[in-house]
Amino acid sequence: MTPEHDFAMESARLDERLQECAALRAAGPHPRRPEVPADVSAADWARAHELFQTLLATAADGTGAAAACIGALADLCVYVRNAVALGRSNQDGASAAGVVGDVAATVRLAGGPAGAAPCLAAAGQALSNAVTQNQPLQLALLESELGCCAAAEDTAYGCLLSAESGAARTAGLVLLVNSVRAHGALCRTLCAAGAGRALARRVGELFGESVDDAAEDKELLFAVLSELASHGQLGVLLAEAAPLGAPGLLDALAVHCREHDDPARHAQLADAELLRVLARALAATRAVLERLRADESTTDPDDIIAARRCARSALAALVLLTADMEPALSARLCDCGVVREAVQLLGLLSAYLPRAEKIGAGGAGTGGSDGSSESPVPRMFMFKRELIQIIGHAAHRNPAAQDLVRELGGLALVLDHTRVDDNHPYIREYAVVALRGLLDGN
Image (cartoon, rainbow, N blue to C red):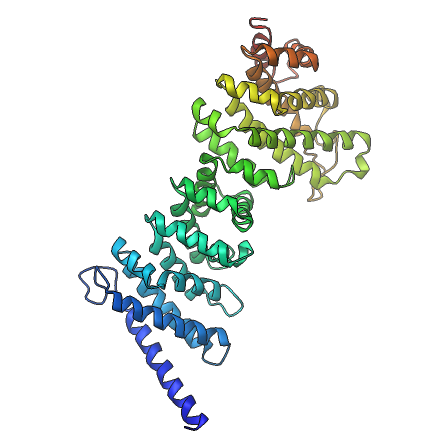
């Protein structure tokens, strides 16, 4: 057989496969449509797997047929998306035949240099449908992706999250949300691997970068992070980041604490690892302010902005975590350095920003990174309110915390804020309450 004859036969076979995929694409998601039965046979899933393997191999070769194969893969993914949406039987059948793995491979292929947006979106939707409400398949997919990909961006999840196509990004987020929801084992598996933690931190970055609180993508991003927080994984993620390097994760923590206002859940969430991370954020904020006081010209304005943002979220979370807290959590606040850092930061802010009328656009600090003259430092003035609240919460009916605050000079700081004039808006009332907590029973 001549090479030319060989090539003609292979091209004919490929054309047949392309036509078959196009025919499959017409299949609809409704069980009354004969093209997609409610229970796809094992033979049909095996045939789909064979088609995937042929198309993936040809597309990866980068030959002239690659573009046609990408289109056929999109057709095949539409069929899979519709079929697995009909129920668990089809999900399990697709997985047993290797089709779920084929779809994940299609995502990775379509998300690469040879990618095409329609194929990536269809593959992402198919992958999401293939494991929705099927925890064993969700866990198996995650373990497979983390096992075969060394970097987060190489996983099917990472390809979808970094896609330019909005439909593909949404499919990736829906896949993640459905996977982590009420699935503690998967949350722990995700954060046990380096690539998984990098993927979760990327979700945090995207959440922090999103400015539209009403956007669907931001709601999905928060849903992922909130589930990770509920299963005790945010501390793991934050511990690996720089103290002021994960504002999105801290933002999500603050929102999670606000939306889950329950002392028992807060005590479970605020483990020693998370509290040490929050104490570290306060210490890093204090270090930036101390450098700024010593020599304003050598302090990077971006460091000031990062310190303000991270401190804002860390303090908001701590105020909520410490309100009506259980005794075990109260003791952890002292052991993990939160009380010490809160008192020291309050002392620095009180010395640096003593009166509201002395600060303004031309006050202490440098301009923002956008070149504006307004400084983010004066806006840290109101952090004194949150710090006083945290100190008062920690000291309430806790003699050890009361003694520690007094030793650090915190009692005098709080007392000073009970005597100030109207130039301390909304701070005096909190100082009075905190003073009661510091003196109660001691």
